[in-house]
Length: 182
Image 1: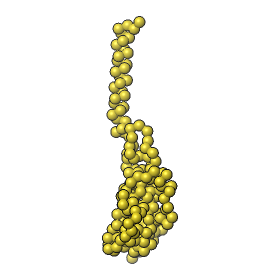
Image 2 (image 1 turned 120 degrees about the horizontal axis):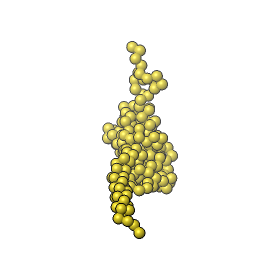
Image 3 (image 1 turned 180 degrees about the vertical axis):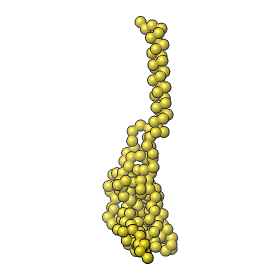
Image 4 (image 1 turned 30 degrees about the vertical axis):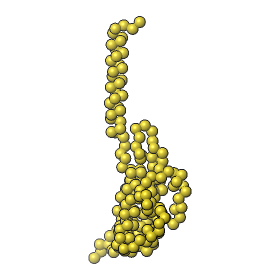
């Protein structure tokens, strides 16, 4: 038989445990790692790459673009692709030929690395997905299976466009930094 004193002690222990669980339930989501990297950054990067392509098309007043034909002044749009620094070893691949005259949907940009942080869940992780930018659907998350079926032959790492722009600046040698020998 449980004494009155033991019942009080059990009640205090249960209330304390319940309080700890409630506080942990409130604080743990707040202490969860930032959602800035992963698919959040990849979505920003594919959108930013698409915006760079759109700026070039707008300046040229055209609906088609072959990235191999970019002028050095047009490559500057690829210098500051949002989200790239948060992708770690992820790469944003850009379609080398964009054609908005076609009625067919096409892939404009995609991150080659799958992340699991979007959408955020309280328990467990989301399935791995890739950020992709399509001509008609905008930026979306696609499954690993969908990514595996994409034809990415000829797609260009957006960082190579960024690097090519820096390499073309006057007075710069990418291996040495600025030329200040006037």
